[in-house]
Amino acid sequence: MNSKLEQFANSGFMRKVQGFSAKLSQSPAFGTISQGMGGTMGLIMIGAVVQIICAVGGMLFGWKAGTPIYDLLYMPYELTMGLLGLFMSFTLAYSYAKRLGVKAQLQSGFTSMVCFILVCSPLISATTESGQTVRALNVGSLGANGIFVAILIGLISVRITKFSVDHNWIIRMPDVVPEGILNSFNSIIPSGINILIWYGLAILISNLTNGAMTLGTLITTIIATPLSYLVSPLGMIVIVILFCLSWFFGIHGGSVVFTAIMPIYIAAYTTNAELAAAGQPLVFNPVFLYGCLTILGGSGNTLPLCIMGLKSKSKQISAVAKASFVPGLFNINEPAIFGFPILYNPVLLIPFILNSLVVMGFMYVGFKFNLMSVPQILIMTTLPVGIQQFMSTLDWRNVVFVFLMFPIVFLIYYPFFKIYEKQCIAKEEAEAQE
Image (cartoon, rainbow, N blue to C red; front, side):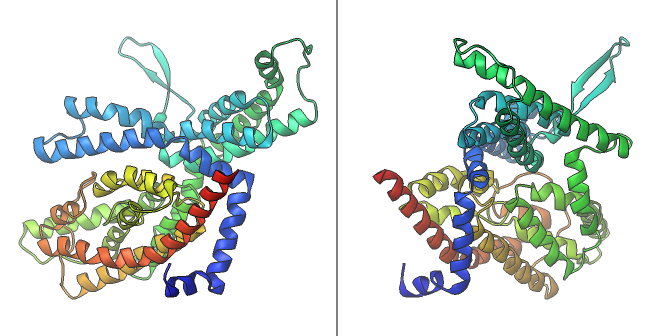
C-alpha cells in the first residue's frame, strides 16, 4: 500500500475497526457463519448462472415468468437460491458442532434443518379437485430471506445440543457400539429438546398472531413496519443504512426494506406511467432514491469491488472476484456478499454503506436539477448494469449516470479493500506456514 493508504489503515478509527474485525473472526460463532456461507457458494453460483440465462432469454426471446421455457429453466434457481436458508441452516450447524467438538456433527446439521422448517415454513393444507386434503411445505421463506433465522437456529441449536451432551442428557450405549450409531443415539434427546423448543416457539408465535406469522416474518415485520414511514429524502438515508446493515447481519436487505416500501414504490411508478401516457410531466418521489443501492452489481454496488479483486494477491479474494464478476454484471451479487464475505465483515461494511449514500446524494441532485429522468416503467426482474436504468426511464442520461458513478464507488471501496486484502494475505501466509 502507498503512504496515504498506510496512514489511513493505521488511523485510530481503522485500527478499532480492524480490531473489531479480528475479534469477530476469532469468535467460533462468527467464524462458523463465514464458513457456513462458504459451504453454500456452489449453490449460489448455480442460482446466479440460472438467473443470467433467464435474464438474457427475457431480453432476446421475451421469456417471462409463467411461460413453460422460463419456468423450466428457472427451476434450478428455485432449488438452490430458493432453498438457500435451508441449506445454510445445515452447513452452519455442522460447522459449529465441529468447532465446539460436538461429535454428532451430521445429526446437528439435520436437527437444525428440521427446526428451521418448523419455525419458518409450517405445513399448509390444500384441497385437490377430487376433494382430497394434501399437506405441503410453503418453501417461500426457506431462501435468502430466511438466512438470519437460519443463522440463529444453526448456532443456538448446536449450543443446546452441546449443553445436553455435557450434562449427560443422552441415551447411553455400550462402548463396543460403532461411533456412527453411538452418535445417532446420543443425539436423540438433544434433537428432541431442540425440536420441542423451536416448534414450541413456532406454535406460540402462530397462536399469538392467529396463524399469520412465523419467526421469520415476525422479525421482518418488526424491522420493516417503521420503515414505511421514512419515505422522504432524509428518511431514505435511514432506509439505505438499514438495508445495508440488514445484509451485514445476515438478513436479506431487499426482503425487509423493499417489503416495507413496496406499496409506495409501486404507486410512484404507476403514477408516472399514467402521467407519461397522458403526455404530462413526471413527478419525483423520494422512493426512487432506493435505486442507489443496486445500480452497480446488486446490493451495495459491489461490481467495482469484484473488479479490483480480480488481480488480488489474496487467493480467497481472487477466487471470489472471478466467481462474482459475471453475475455482478447482471446485478446479481450473492456470490460477492457471501464470498468475500460482506456479512459480519466490519471492514467492508463501511464502504458498503458509504458508497450507497454517496450515490444516493448524486442521484438526488440528478433528479432535482433534471440531469436525468425519474422512472416511469416498473421492472421487477434482474437486468445487466445500465440496461435496467434505461428501460425504467427510456433516457440514455440515466445510463451515463451509472457509468459516472463507477469511479466514485471504486474509490470509496478501494482503501477498505486494500486493508481487507492485507488481512487475507496475512491469514493465508500464516495458514501456509502451519
